[in-house]
Image 1: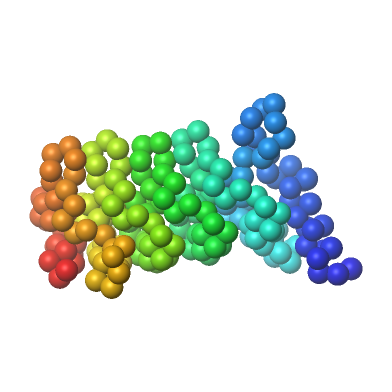
Image 2: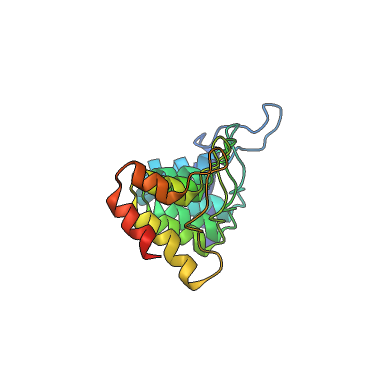
Length: 201
């Protein structure tokens, strides 16, 4: 049995075996592919037994990496939340939109900054994530949330990018609700590490 046949058989087992079941529309056969990231993260043992990566197989079968659940969660957002860098990279390479946000405006980059995942921040920026996208309620940017949470590693990753390319984050971007700056967010919470990073740029 050739590699192509084997890969297709494994993909059939994952998709036809009922592991990807959510529907975009109950009257449609179209699969809500947000499940592919969950499948990837939760079936590593099964993947090793099958000798294949479920996420890679599903993407090869043209699963849509940008389909979202009702709250806006995409496979990329799910992977960022879970901290699965390999899944994040695979999805971005498959043309997942790095700027597709939740219904509240929080982007994958915002969530990565919020959780201090500097590696994910760097990867998302490399694939075109917009560091100026702000969540809707208060207008907080990824830089602001990183400063507020004293997430120095993520903050450094956001600002370091700015020192080399135009796409880097603005350290002075203020919130829309009250005009607070990232420096204010760091000082008001005595976030020394974040403040040091902000002042170094």
